[in-house]
Every structure is written in C-alpha cells, then in structure tokens.
Image 1 (tube, rainbow, N blue to C red):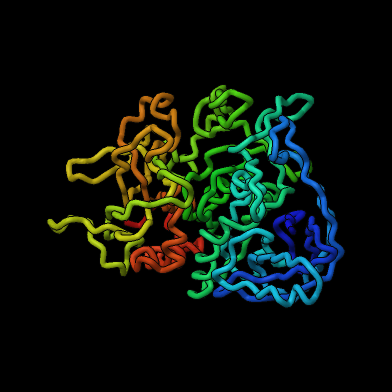
Image 2: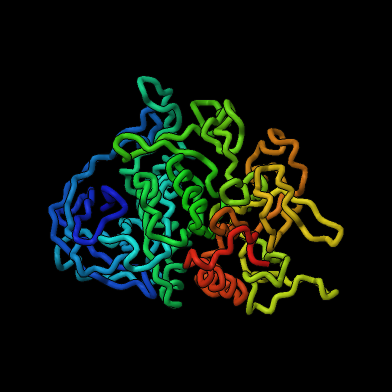
Length: 494
C-alpha cells in the first residue's frame, strides 16, 4: 500500500517539489510525467525509504473514517525541479517496492491517468507570461472538497460531503466545515476534465500557462501578465481574494472564459498557513442536514449568505441550472444547446443556424453529453420572436447575450432525479420564475466574459466529439487571447 500528497500543488521551475508519502513497503520510487499532447514520461527518482503513517482518526469517532480536516503528516521528501523542465501540469506516480518490482510496473499512458497512488502538480515558469498569455486555472479547492482520501480497496468516505468536520469558530478562527489540503486521494477530476482539454490545447498550438486556486488566492498580481483566464470543468469553491482579482482583471480589460459550471458557488477561507480551508456550507453538522444558514453561499444576502451573486461575475448561476442523477459522472442529455444569434463571432465557421431563416434552429453539441453533469443558467424571458433573453433579475449583467440554451424540463427536487442547482433555491428565491436552463453566453464589462454553462465543455471539446464545439472554442481562444481584440462596450460583437 502506498499513497501520498504534495506539499503544494504548484512549483516554479528550478524549485523543489515537496512530496509526502506513506507506504508499508521498505522503499519506493517516484515517476513524473507531463500532461500535453500525450502523457510524456519525464523522470524516475528514488529509491526513498518507506515509512507507514496512520491517518488521523475522525474527531467524531466515525469508525473506519479518517479526519478530513487535519494535516495527515506523512513523511516529507524533496524532489528538485530542473530549470529545463517545461511548464505545465505534471502527474506523479508512486511505485512501491525494490528495483526489481518497480521494473515490473509499466509506465502510465493516456489511458491510465486516473487512479490511486497518484498526484499532480502545476509547474509554472520563473517569469509569468513568457510561455503564453492564456492562464489555465486548475480548480484545486473543488478537487479537495470532493476528495474522500480513498485508496485501492479502502473507502474512507471523508470530505465536505461525507462525514465532514464542522468547527464553531472563535478566537479569530472562521466558523464552518474544515478541510485539509494535506491528504491523499489519487487523481480523478484531472483525468476526466483537464487531461483531454490540455491535450487538445497543445495539439492546436495554444501557448498556455497554468496556476492553481491557491496561486490566484495568494497573488494579487498573478493575472497581470495574462490576457485570458480559463476556468475549466468543475469550479465550485472560490475564495474572496480569487473572486476580487478575477473581477479586477475583467474591469481592466482582461478576458475570462468559464468553460465550467457550478462555478463560484461556495466561498472558502484558506487557513492554517493556506494548507486547509473552511467553508460554512449546508453540508451535515452532526444530525443536522441541511445546515442553515450556510453563510458562505455566494448569492443570498447576509445573514443567509455572502450577498454577491456569482452571476455578476460569470453571467450564470447553478441555482438557475441543475444536475443529473446517479453517481458521477452519470448520464447526460444528448440534445445540445439550441443556437441563438448565429451571426455572432462565436459561431463563425460553424455553419450553425438559429432558425431566423424559417427553419428549426440547430443544436450545438447534439448527440454528445455537452449539457453536463452540472450546469449553470441565467434567469430569462422569451421575446416576441421566441429568443431567450436574460432578464437580469438574478444579478446577471444586462449586456449578457444568450447564445445557446437548453431548458431543464422536467426538473425534480428529489435528490435522486434531475434537480435544481440547489435544493431550496425555488423556495429561497421565489422571484426567479423563469424555467431553469443550461445557458451559454457572453458579456463585456471592460474585458469579455464567456460562459459555457456546463462542466463537460472541456471533455466534449478535448475529445473532439462535436465539430461545432471545437470551432466555437477555437473562435473563443483566437479572439480573446489578446486584450486588444476586445471592443469596449461591445456586448459580444454580434
């Protein structure tokens, strides 16, 4: 048995990767790969002496489950990162046993990214912006929120959703559910959303640099060298500093593409030297479920929440979207987005029609699972021509242009069926009367903001499952990769 985690999920070239490992083997080795056009083997280091460390017991005495709020304090090992390594996302494979056993373990390939005894880290250039002007933000806070710290044949069921740990706060400590970033758990979301899209970006020649949520949280100047920020996949947990800096980036003329959904739903408060975070969510507290008020929900007004609706930043909200039944990744509807404003630059070269010629409008991504496991939407009304237009009653900017829409109908409140973006949103926000719908759109507020409205956009694009989605993504990146191409006051260039 072997498992581990990194001290920090980003490293600068020429620095040192801090790796924490627990194993019952006498020795182990570390293989490192780079995610790009294909999974590229970089190096193998070791052997290192193995030490087995027991995980901390759950503070509530839950048998068989470890404490998700505590640093697991595995032994630390430092791995130098040479200057010649190329920036990007790197995968770590932990290989237990002596040299003979290690030789019997085959190297990973593109089909073997997901699994236990694996980790990843982002390698950043020494001078930001020297590789490319597009910054890809890996949603690491969300990754940790769902990390159960399982291992092969071992279910620990401990995160923000299963057997969470709640702290009452006080003495300058924030109240809420606490989660440590120093826990093992393997690689899951990186394989599903990020790896296919990262490979696609490199195949098409886009020069991209990477960061983590913590990088954005800590560095007020992080976005300055970049023209376009990418939020990819499932990007649910944001700190106040992250949100402020992205809003300032847009106000200064920078662009953002939210190729994601359930975006900016919960606020987090990094703590313990930024090795953990606290979020006052509606997740279980003892026998209480849901726990209310959930004061770190972005959209409700205090004291019920933060009072900063996420759609003022993104244009859309999970409370106007929904999610699909069953275990993740689950199934998807296959109808795709109904196209609106087909003459907009986002659809250039796709050949898609919006029905203004008298025919039926085309559907972007039809036949694929584009409308993802979770999706976001904007409150809307239909005009006299049957075109959906954002109403703005939920905080969506007036200039938000709906380019694609998929009505979530029927929507059930039962957690085991297609459901609202949040179980109690229809009761808590009764003024929002439009049907829930996954929504793709764009607006300008200094810089341009595009939102895909679905977590599965990067998967469909990265695997090239739909030519229209690929072309829309290329149009988006080609246009927004340089600030100068934005037209002030243009609500999207239609």
